[in-house]
Length: 537
Ligand SMILES: Cc1cc2nc3c(=O)[nH]c(=O)nc-3n(C[C@H](O)[C@H](O)[C@H](O)COP(=O)(O)OP(=O)(O)OC[C@H]3O[C@@H](n4cnc5c(N)ncnc54)[C@H](O)[C@@H]3O)c2cc1C
Ligand code: SF4
Image 1: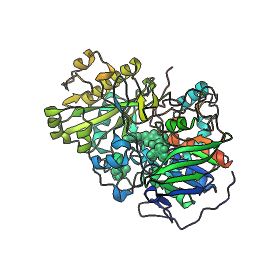
Image 2: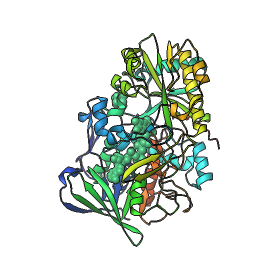
Image 3: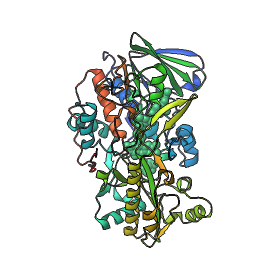
Image 4: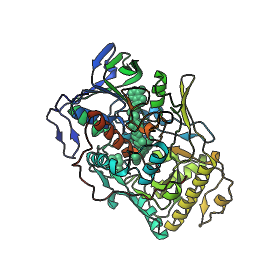
């Protein structure tokens, strides 16, 4: 494909430093009630961490680009800070997607322009070098070294303004946890995040009301518009038309009941790790290796709560502002997970009078999360037309959860907690440093309260066509001009939050499609998070 159109327009940065394009090139699907055809160089399906960067880079490189997004577009003016209302509009199925298996696991996904980045916590970790080593050994991805990816990470980090949380907006929740970690001598630090002018309002997961969070809907998507790309919101891609082994067009059902046909030279599928395999399978694409939809890693998570006599007020400060990587070598990352009272009310795993009592003491409650780099794997499929995600937590991961929960309890005792609440059915609240009820429990998966935020791997990259769905360039092994640029291509659990891994791979894909070498002039960050992730096999 040739670069052929320069970027134009009068874009500016507003007072907060947010990028404002000269024209908002978004066409709501609600207004498309008929059959309409557009013609572009590249059609990108999805506007989250994987789709938006590739669209922006391709458009800036001179290609004509259409972005199809099933969700609607919302702006900071629409974000009212009320979790229940925002969850209903920004998340797919109001945030109620869950896995089937030996423990039901809530797996929320964003569905809006910006994808899940609109509702995520903003934590940024590069792919750990130890993980890249395993990609080389296990998946033949020789090209994906830390050095080769460095220019793409730098570019992503500059565009997103990845910076470390200053302690004054980290929130009491993080500071109390840091106190416990420091007392125990555990390694940790304030998180690096994609923000500009964050004021610590505590509701990142429900739409940042100030646009401080630099999600793709306020960064990459408007920059793509500035370079001439168009977003079609409320348009669900349902068909990729193939002929002679090449994609010719994508057809999308619009929320207005119409049909949008995008004729193109290349298709980039970026629907996320749950929906990309479904779309590909419906076309019979990506099926050659038998791996499509399989190898689902989710980085399962839980949270421990604790009661303090001091005031914590989890509603103030950055919700996910501190991490502890002391146990990353065991597959355990401890990361903040605070939130406002209505979020806490929804997520506390208690009922009745106990729930009511705890909510009355909400200002004195602290909550911290733990994520397990999973050895378990699941799969995504359709049953009777409906999405089904099967995932069983294996014994090894249950044991890692036990270890992580015990560590968090220990940390809370070191921080001076009065009571600690492990997320384990049948284990009562713990008092006075007593861990016995937890240690005695014959822990099974079904007793745990688990959520997951990082689905990966369902269209995994592998250099060998019989082992993976896409190659190291993210091209489908079995089609000439169809690419996967999202979390589904990430071949294994990476032990840290994945958004900038997905974005760096997306940027690299765009550079390859444009025939460009890696950027050479991106500034080196002064510091960056370097968690001690080790991979055990
Ligand atoms: C609550 C929460 C907090 C998180 N916090 C962090 C964090 O702090 N740091 C981090 O690194 N990661 C975090 N994540 C995960 C991170 O946001 C995801 O890993 C990342 O966004 C995945 O990118 P993606 O492109 O694969 O999918 P998404 O960002 O989900 O984008 C996929 C898009 O495709 C659209 N789509 C799907 N199907 C179609 C179709 N057929 N047609 C058109 N459009 C379609 C969807 O509507 C969606 O907008 C969090 C996730 C959640 C849920
Ligand atoms: S803490 Fe508030 S201001 Fe900062 S990114 Fe989150 S929602 Fe936006």
